[in-house]
Amino acid sequence: MKTIAVTGAAGFIGSRTILELQKRGYKTISVDAVEHFQTRGELSIIPHEMIIAREGFIKWLLSHSVEAIFHLGACTDTTELDENYLRQINFEYSQAIWSHCARKKIPLIYASSAATYGGGENGYDDNEDAIPTLQPLNPYGWSKQAFDIWALSEERAGRTPSAWSGFKFFNVYGWGEKHKKKMASVIVHAFHQINATGKMKLFRSHKAGIGDGEQKRDFIFVEDVVDVLLFAYEKSIRRGIFNLGTGQARTFLDLIRATFMNMGRTENIEFIDTPEILRARYQYFTQAEMGKLLSLGYTRPFTSLEDGVARYVSQLKNNSPT
Image 1 (tube, rainbow, N blue to C red):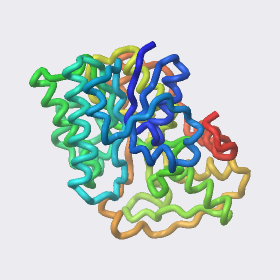
Image 2: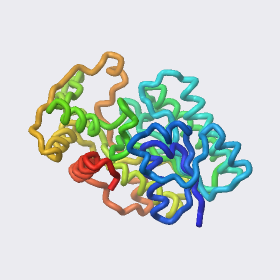
Image 3: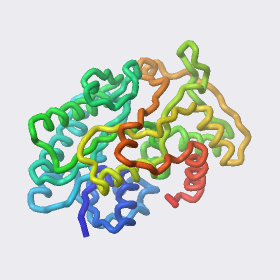
Image 4: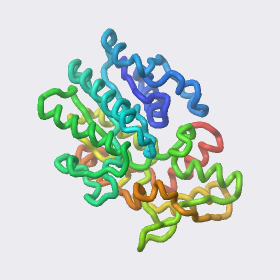
């Protein structure tokens, strides 16, 4: 039985990755800040076979072996402005994990972010030659960008894991994200707002030519994300940085209308001003170019927004991933 370590294992995507790895017969090592396993409510039903504190993980690796690492742990708060903290958590910690995988010649699958694309002026093509030209809109995006650039420089120097792949996550949604609070998807906020007030507040558009609620994102269901991560390991993607979205942008109005419908409630949407502090960093459109991943043989269709919202609302009602 192969042993796989997952960082960020108490979090949204990490916990769902742990669950799927166990379903497929792998032994798992769950790595995260210990207090996160104790404070993340709905995720407490996810079984963890062995827990290693994030702070001690690199030292633990010196005397233990794993067959692969899924590095999904990070500060994912796009409003975090402490660049030193982001450098430590999102860059230096990732460097240490990469270097271990390179020394031991084991596979590494890691999480990058679509935040590296900034306002999308240069498009959303995962051409690695263009990565150094991207202009993220916030320190979080820059921290992810810095590691992508560093990883490519390590490859040029011949210091790589046996196989490695980084994934630029677009807007991931699904059961297990409530602990993210303000950073959780709009769907979970809508579910609770609609239950409490019968209506949903959405940010008004502050960009000419784009109507209120017509801002678009590439929304991807968490189960699709996990399936791609395991495809990267099991089909052994040799190397590369890839987009991970559906390839189809949808509006926030599409998202919220589907939520109202699946809750059996009458649509009632109120538009509010986007806070000034967010406006300069706000993305009005994201859409992943997916040809690079699909060219490697990934053939499973991505969950449609309508089906994903229907499943998610059902899961929220039952407080369960199934």
